[in-house]
Image (cartoon, rainbow, N blue to C red; front, top):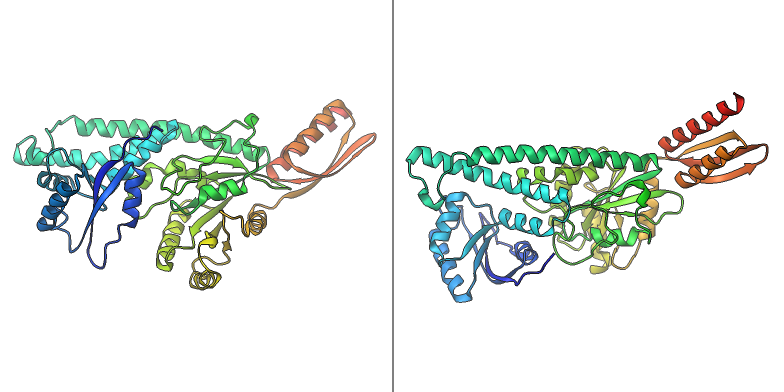
Length: 436
C-alpha cells in the first residue's frame, strides 16, 4: 500500500450527554492517513439540519481556517443534508467526512485480495444507496435537480446501485463457496480450525505470531487467497482487513489459526453485513478465541465483550474462549479486579500477554482441551506397497502412537473423525484387494 502525505484534518464529535471522547476517532483518522490538527466536541441533542448546533459549526469553520485543515472528520453518521449544510459553512475545498465514510476509506486502503476489495465496494454501495434514494425523493418532491447541493439527480443511479449490489453479492457467494471447499479440505486433511476474533488493537495479530509455527500453510492443501507468510503486528487500527492464516505450533495436532478483521464500535448493520463473508472464517471455525484488551477501562471491556458475543453467537456454533490480552500493560491487582468484574460475561477466561509470551502455554493447553476430541483407532492391514502409502498418509494427517510391521501392518493412532473415517475406508480397500 502506497503511503500518502497525511492530510491536515479537524476532528469533530457530538454526544447527547456526558463528555465526548475523541480517542478512537483520532486513531481512525490517523489510520486513514490524516493528520489531526485540531478537535472540536459538543454535548447537545442532534440538530436535524447540521448535526452539531449551527453555532458550533461556525466555530468548526473558524478552527478549520486557523489550523489550515483540508477536511473535517465527524465521529458520527451524517445524513446527506447534514453533510451538505456543514460543508456549506466551511471554506471552499474542505471535505466533510463522517465516521462511516472514513471507515470505508480505511477499508479501501487495506483491501488487498479480490474478496476484500469486493466487500469494500459492497459497503460503499450500501453507504451510497440511501443518499441516492434521498436525491430521488427530493427531486420528485421539489422538482429541483441539484437541490441542497446533493448533486444532479440521475433516475438510473438508484437502479444501477442495486444492480451492482446484486452482482457483488453473487460473486462473494461464489468466493465463499470456494473458501468453504478449502476449509472442508483442510478438515479432511486433519486440520482443526481456530479463529481469532475481537476488536481492533486488541492484539490479535501479535497473538497469531506468538501461536504460529515457523512453517506456513502447506501449499498442497490449497492455499486460501488471503493466506500470507507473515502477520503484521502494528499499533494501528485495521492492520488486518482480510484474513491471515498460519499453521499453529502444536505437538499432537495440526491446527490452523486465522486472524480476521477487527470489530469496531458503533458499526451500522449495513457495514457489518458487507463484511460477513470475512466473518465466515469465524463462524465456521472449530474454536473461536475472543481477544480482549484487558488494559482498557472495565466498562469498555464489558461493552465490547457483550457486543462481540452478540455478533458471534448469531451464527457461530463453535465454543468461544475469551482471551484477556495485554496483561503486561497493567498490574496484577487490576487484572484480578477485572477478572472478578467479568466473571459472569466471560467465565474461565485465559489471561495472556501476546507481546511477552506470558501464559501463552496455558492458552495452548486450553485450545487443545476445547477443540473436538480426537478419536482413537487401530487398523490391521496386509503388508503391501499400497499399505505403506496409507501408513504414510496417516502419519501426515493424524497422530501416530505405534506401528508394528510383520506379515501385517498394525497401526495405532488418533485423529479427527473425518480422518479416522478416511483411514478406515483406505484400509478396507486394501483388505478387500488382498482377499480378492
